[in-house]
Length: 397
Image 1: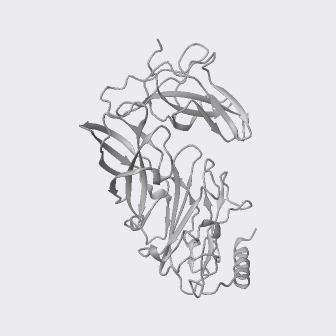
Image 2: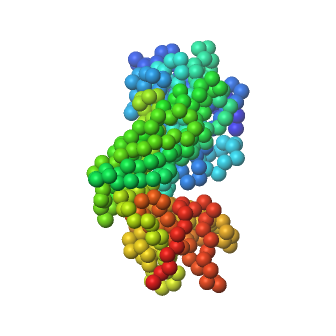
Image 3: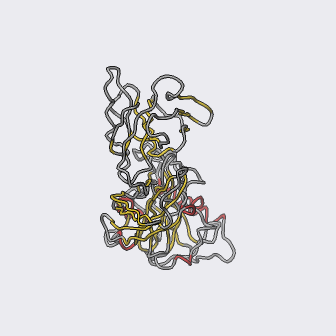
């Protein structure tokens, strides 16, 4: 498939077939990852939801976001999914390709430079993002040629907070957090540093059992300025202590772009925190036989895992791991926080095995996970090399 030719054909068709009265960008301006010589793609990970409802696309001129309208010009108008593209990639593939002033929406007319923010969410976890930024070429086709970046855009997770400490003071919980550098999700030209686009990381909180991924359900408790590299700071959660035994307090992160012009619509993976001052006693294990053991069932909606209670603590949250059947040393997290005793996942493309591990969540960090179960000789299965938490096993009574 010759993508450059496809773009030119599509552009010609658009000019002939749709010329709205009162076009909001005249003469029209194209923005695309399909350039005269090169074509790039947007690569989502295999665990991305990747539906028209989950994918969110935004674009604007730096400093003048009010001149665009993503509400009527959403990504379905300019971010096609590609099923026959050539990159060596197992997950969903998209490419940016639109014409300002020719799309059936009010797009506005960015000038000088353009930022594109793409977001999706994982099946079991927080939000994903990729950001592209280029300058305008007045006589170029496309005018905003994102192929000049010369890299595919890989969508990566929004950095989650790493909680190093939490201390209650009256009804307020003070939390010290750090965030990994989000620069791996930014794609720009050499003269455009990531700090010109990503300006801060917002810290948010939610109280419940199953934290949502949509930022609108969370409460912002702090803004940490991003200056490149790891971002560190402290935030206060008012009226958080002593806490509710029926719910869990979580913190998460969201990215701010353009000094407050845009916040990501999704948040990162959620991390539980607590006012409980006790040193974590650890966690036990699930039953491996009998009515409380892990079961797997199939249905039209996917594969459902179900399990019983853990011996310790009495009300844990759970981690779910998977690995290739027969390769018992390869084990990776599907979810690091499941508040229920069931989980439905898409049916895997190959044979998998699953383990459910309880963890003690109503303690101040560090939260600790329990046992992965016993081997045939009675010894403990080793934890995953990508474990959600450090392990502190408490023997079952």
